[in-house]
Image (cartoon, rainbow, N blue to C red; front, side, top):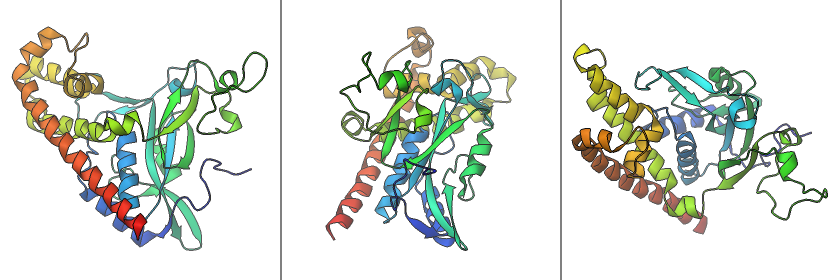
Length: 303
């Protein structure tokens, strides 16, 4: 039985350790917003995938899923302390985490090593070291081709989706044939970065959200964290920036929810207007950057 059935042979490049470290250093220099850890790991990972491809290398991806994502019987998340102290709860919670994997030749062996500067800012690490860092019981993971951008899930496990009441396979086939041990899981399929995701710039929007959130933290929150004179303001800012769903609602979606209601937005209209401009500036920057990488890839394919 193949250990990683969703990673096709020769789909991920094998490189030496020196090259791996040089590529890691170049990825750090791209300006990707690794510091905001609340969300968008899938967008960072796919941008890195494109960056590596523009350099002539192919990576894989490792997906780690907390029990809350794949099971109806658990609420367990990947959870750790927010060292920046911008989360309203003091914790960062993930249902899943994903990062690029490169295959690195060390001596006579080829090691699967993860690029995740948000968790390991100095160098790539072995994938089991990465999994251990997540410190989550009953975590499951997949190592697979990097072309898969994001996953689909359902309230019905795979075993019930794959067959109708007569035992025949449904006419709509999944993009990915998941391993048999996923039959009782709620993760049902993966999809590529195309169609709606591509047309609406999901990657670039995710990167712009993270970069704008970090700018807000550095410029508006960080200096106030230890000030008792600004507790109410800090509390509001944490609710806005520390909760990525609120931040996306305001800046990406130009919308509202029960926390980001009319009163909140009116109260902070000036700072929201300021960072909305910053968000769109960041968005345009990432659209241009991502486009240039894809142009490099297209040029390499014509040579």
